[in-house]
Amino acid sequence: MKDGSGRVTVAGWYDDVETLGDAERHAIAEAPQYDSELKTQLGLAEVEGEGKSLLELINSPSLNINGMSSGDVGALARNIIPTTATAVLDLRLVKGNDYQRQVERLRDHIRKQGFYIVEREPTPEERLKHPLIAKVIHRSGGYNAERTRMDLPISLAVVAAVQSTSADRIVKLPTSGGSLPLSIITENLKTVTITVPIANYDNNQHAENENIRLQNLWEGIETYAALMTMSN
Amino acid sequence: MKLTLIILFVLFTASPSVAQNNLQLEVRSYREKHEHQILKEFVDLLSIPNIASDLPNIRKNAAAIMEMMKRRRLNPRLLEAKSANTPPAIYGEWSTPGAKRTLILYAHYDGQPTDPKQWTDTQAWQPVLRSASLEKGGQIVPMPLATTAMNPEWRLYARSASDDKAGVMAILSAFDALRSEDVKLTSNLKFLFEGEEEAGSPHLAEIIKLNLQLLQADAWIICDGPVHQSGRKQVVFGVRGDTNVDVTVYAAKRPLQAAIMAIGHRIRHTFWPDSSRL
Image (cartoon, rainbow over all chains, first blue to last red; front, side, top):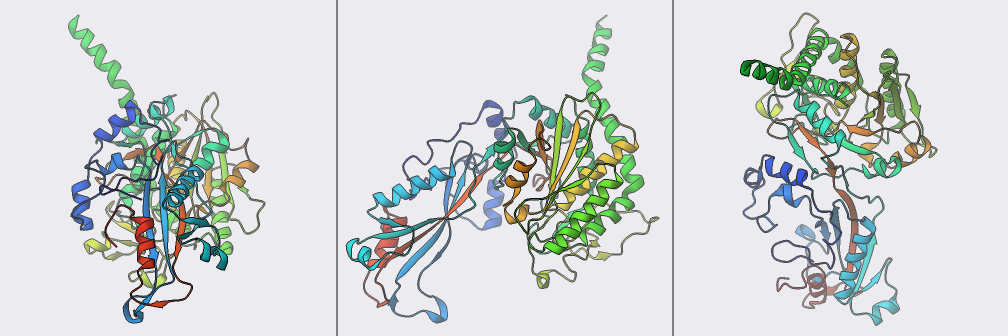
């Protein structure tokens, strides 16, 4: 499903991607790059992406294996051929992608490899008839990406307001690496979303020992006061 | 003449940022005078367990935030889903005469589940201050008395201290500062605090659809996540979408003794069709 450089080989995978505008490309070029530091922190000799930066790459749809399972390892390892192998695939999407359509492309790709696709356990008849069978289950809870144009008046006003509270040049990101169902908000209310975070980077969110540095809370108050009084 | 032009130029270009800096100083001065009060209100909120599936406690959080918003005269109300056992969202509003723009300020009050045993010396919902981060050897400092100065490098440890009750606290405290200093707002403000973001917001669409008029706004400002790792503030315009697929391939119906390569072939064929690696 991927070539040697990590590019996804599923037909049409990158076709719907909405290209970045000038403001977005400029913001990426201006943002601090932490790629080599991250490689060291993560212990990676080489990364995918044909030399593109992480900030560029997160504007492309991805396909990763979150987990795989087949047979046993460790103390339970023994000389058998397992009956099944399962992988959980993670599809990260960008503006322009539709999560249903992207999964259809994945199904087509598996089919093209010669697999007969089922959405439940194959029957004994199917097993005897088809040499290659893949059960493909699209998990519930998928959603599309969301991206607000950086050159809208409201976007410029938010940037100016946050910048007014900081002597350092603020960082503008067209998209974060993470996922949130913000499309729920924009699709139902025909509005835009802009994220203005305040927490310290090393806050251990989601893990044990979560914390906030008091100065981040204090500065967050100033940031939000600036947003509540920003120019029209 | 030339000098006058330069002065005019400087005045003209400098005035917006001077106004903003004054605002920032006013807000800072308010915060410095009230930081013990802000910390106390924050610690009280962080002391209530807030896993989305723990409904009795989630409702205690919602009730506490309702009280916080009533104190600020934000006319709060609970937005309930029709689906049973759903954490409510809390809505509030402040109308600004003459404002042409409406902003919704969003944060979420639920937090990620956590294993109490993995916290160092303290518990997730028993907030403590430390002199620095644990990684840098931070030691517990007692909650300061009203007369004790607070070091801004201190850290408050608790579930959702950052993600995302900090958002609730920063938004409400910013509003306090502006009201107290009598600063003119430029937008109508709406507030929305969600109670199941960490569970994937399964009922946010339902709550929005039940309140389409109430939740209209020119923009939703989302207060969630960290600033840039360089410490610089950041504004993020998008998030990625996400979906997951399980793929299972099959060999014989029962395990066979080794030497038959079928399963290996199938795995390879599915995931690495162009590769000679197994």
